[in-house]
Structure formats: structure tokens, C-alpha cells
Amino acid sequence: MRNHIRAAGLAALLVLGVGVAAAQPPPGSDVPSALALGASIPMAKTAMIGVDGKSLSIAAAAGKKGTLVIFMCHHCPWVKAWQDRIATIGNAAAGQGVGAIAINSNDPGAFPEDDVAGMKEQATQLGLKFPYVVDATSDVARAFGATRTPEAFLFDATGKLVYHGTVDDNAHDASAVSKPWLQDAVAAVAGAKAVPTAETKAFGCGIKFRAKSGT
Amino acid sequence: MLALIQRPGARATMVNVWATWCAPCRAEFPAMLRAAKARRGRGLRLVLVSTDFPEQLAAVRKFLRDQGVRDTAYIETGEPMAFINALEPSWSGAIPATLVYDGHGRQVAFWEGAADSTRFSAAADRALSPNSSVKEASP
Image (cartoon, rainbow over all chains, first blue to last red; front, side, top):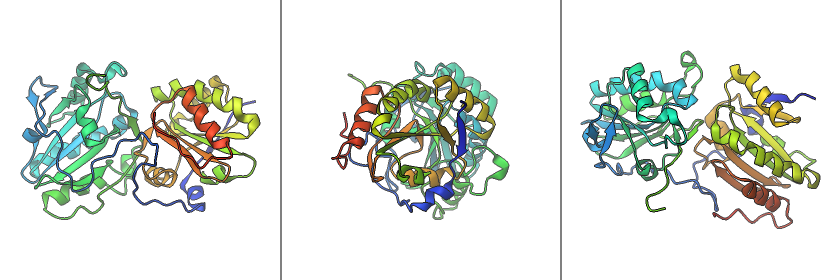
């Protein structure tokens, strides 16, 4: 007997009227808490090595009007689906006064494609004009509460988190995007305006954290 | 999707969200299937939801076939953020993700990331237990 695949769409989900408000992880959950809106940039002065071999911190990559921090990697299909858009947004951010930095926190022992060589290849292919650095302990991801790739955190001119989430509402088809959340958020920060949608979600690859120091 | 969780005919439901290209998802699959199969007679229903893109449907079918899955499985086709928040507001969207419900549709366990047979079994047993309102404790 062959297996059967059915679509599990949103319409069925709404039948039960399950709440969609933001919430803390349920009791017993091991999901780390993501940085809350309004929070400051954690580990901003931590030096990380970039694909160009230079040491750089988030603070050094910050822009006068804001700072975009995006956790990404090389192997993840969702990153691959969005990476051209990530490159476009990040490359354009500098021209808007918003600094950008991409961080890879994955343990390359789990995903060999996510080693520095893979990152260099990816950065070259994408034409990244902003830093792409290695979070060699995964502690920066832990400090942000980042759990997946890609996952974006956008801070305003005062260094407060004003956007957390994904790139847009259609990883699969860039031409079908109706909600360019990250692009809109960067534009808002550049214009010193309120971000229209401050928190979004999408599927992503779970970050493969390195073991904590001392464990 | 959530209607499946409360559909009559099961005393507990385990939902696993996965993708064929997701290494941790593939790694945990055999343990999850064993735990589910061992409790099927006690009323555990397993709902598998793939987040693969539509063009990967053939790969999804092959993977399930290779794993010995003979039941109906699902592929997520709606808006991801609504799907994620409807299932569990604290879920970041990272996969694999597993949610376990008792016979009343109450969630008794949720976690992101791969699990082993002990975790799948413990969560399923808790959902099947008469005292299923007790949520999973962190290890």
C-alpha cells in the first residue's frame, strides 16, 4: 500500500480557533526565549571572524540609523530560497544608513557545508557587501535567542530591537511575495519611522548549536 | 490540520513537522515511528506534516515509503506564520518540531529539535495516561 499525502493548509487550522497571540514557551519547553522587542543588542562587542578573515563585532558593523543582524548559513534550503533577497536587502541597507551583518552559528561538524569555505563560496556567489561572520561558540545565537536560519533581528538608531522574524511571506516564490516584512522594516528604521510589522515567523532550519563552553 | 488532533478515534495524537532535506528530522524519524507504532494499539495517532516545497512531493513520498509509513501524511501548503502560531505560539518555526496532545486535544508536550526514542515514548505515554494534563518537564 502506498502512502498518501494531503495538504495541511490554513483553512483547517482555523476551524479550532487556536490563538495566534505571541506567548512564552509552554512549561517544560526547551525553546530558548528570543530577544524581546525593545531589547539592546547582546554581545555587541564580541569579535567574530568574517569570511574575509578579518575580526569584526556587531557594534563595528552598526549603522547610524540602525543595525540588521541576520542569522544564516550555507546548507539550509530555506536560506537558499531567501538568500538572494537577504543579499539585496543587506547590500542596500548600508546606503540607507543601516548596517548589516550576517552570522553563521551552526556547528560545521553537523553541517560541513557551513564551514568557512562554504560561507566564502556563498558570500561570493551572493555578492555580499556586508560582513558574514562565524559565531564560533554559538553563544551569540544563544544570546539573541535565535533558533533557526534565516532569522533576522533589526535594531533602530538607539540600538533597540524593533523587528524580529523572517524575510517575507513567500520563501518559495519571490515573485509572489505580498508582505516584504524585512525590507519594509529596514526602510522604516532608515526613515526613523515605526516598523509596520514588528514580529513575524516562518519555517527555518534549526540552528545546530555547538556545545556550551565547559560542557 | 488541527481538526485531526481532535478527530475522534484516537486517545492521543503526536504531530511531527519535518522535511526531507532536514537532517535532524530524518535522524529522529525511525525512533519516532517505533514509539508511535508501539502505542498504536493503545490509541496513539501519528500526524506527519512535511514542510517540503511542492516540487519535492516525490521525495516526500519516497522518504515515507522507505521509512515504512503507510498512513496518510500531510504537506503544509498554507501561510507558514499562521500555521506555526496556530499550532504553538512559542514555536519559532524551526524544524523538526513535535507536539503531543491527549485525547481531549490538550497539548501535553512540545519541543523543537530532534528527539530520541525515550523522549517520544515518554511524551506519548503521558498523553495516553489518564493524568495527561501534566506537561512535559525539561530534562
